[in-house]
Length: 239
Image 1 (cartoon, rainbow, N blue to C red):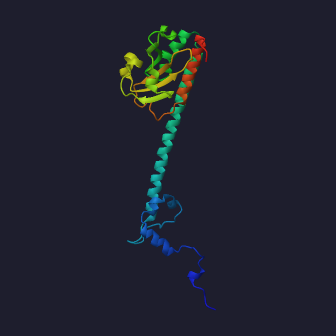
Image 2 (spheres, one colour):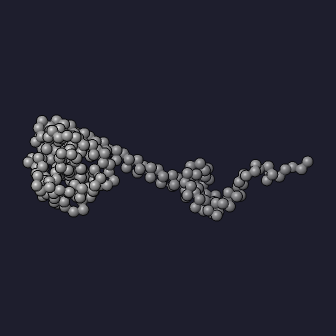
């Protein structure tokens, strides 16, 4: 009986070592494109001649680079988590201060003065629109800045509730004399009541990175809704 050849004994569809070697020669960057294979390959322990690549050193270097990338990503995630926790604590503290106000005047003082310290910003301004004929009730209150009709939509757009951005230029109409200090800003729409004019809460910071478009707006949106509700309650306005 004839002995079957080694080729015949290979299961159909099996790739031979020679075929793998030929493929790698045609694709010398294959391991660069498939770095995950480096963790499962068994490399030679040392160089065994001019034609043998020291895969062990290559793999150690590559794994070191991967670990460094993972370390940087982890550090960035931890830093972002700490920033979020700090922001959450500050906003929750500001909300408690607002809810503890004993009068409408004290509420406005808390929002326009105390909240700057609480939120670690340089300036806080509460704006309310007027059509130039009927002054809004809040315009009689110190700390409130009156702006022309349509200012809120002009600044935020028709649908946006919160806008974070690096200041493109001093917004004197909103920040007044403090406009030159503002390097980044958070602008929050206030819809107190159908019976009240549109409002805007503006937070300004000297830090250009304090409010940027990449940060979340959920906490600031929550703060705006609390301020709306509290003002509505003090002025006895319908929701």
